[in-house]
Length: 240
Image 1 (cartoon, rainbow, N blue to C red):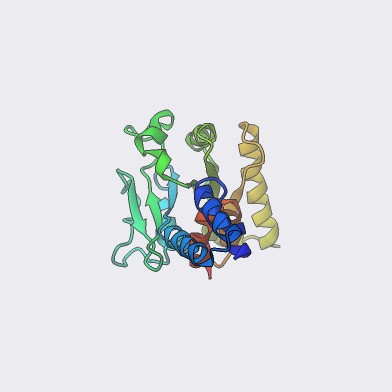
Image 2 (image 1 turned 60 degrees about the vertical axis):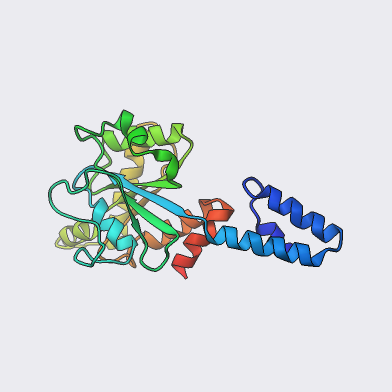
């Protein structure tokens, strides 16, 4: 029972924790067991909402599908294409884990979604964290959005997408070294973000067509570590 108590979040579920401790103090094991079961049922209903954003053409919708273990032509997949396909925020439930919603957000910087107004228009409060996707260098719109997210005290991560394309292009060169090339791209992205005032940015290099390659496992691990306790179990279930 002590292990369960230690895992109860001290903020949102502190009342439940006090009730369980009080029941144990009074040797009321039946009440304590009931309260623990009540807590477990509540924790199993907690949703995890992940927002995926970026400029049009960055590969965010493809990333949404890959994150959910789906291909573009699977039923329920987010629409993808070479032109803008996302005109409003839409939640896509994970097919295996109903408590996880991956949101495909409209492109930053379009006529209807200026960076300064973006978070309010997409109702940022409902998201646990943001993933900002770019297929090249991170641009002014990405940086403006990141700074707005910082002001709202939300977590965000940068994903440099389509890394497989870069590896194919660089692989044609003599003396190609994949590890060095990846590190060059990573440091280029990090320096560009730092130069714009985003200290110690977290950048992950990803191919949505093969999540086992490059930095996707690191992204999962980082998200897991930084989620609040009462949300972390939802992500853990998805990575087992």
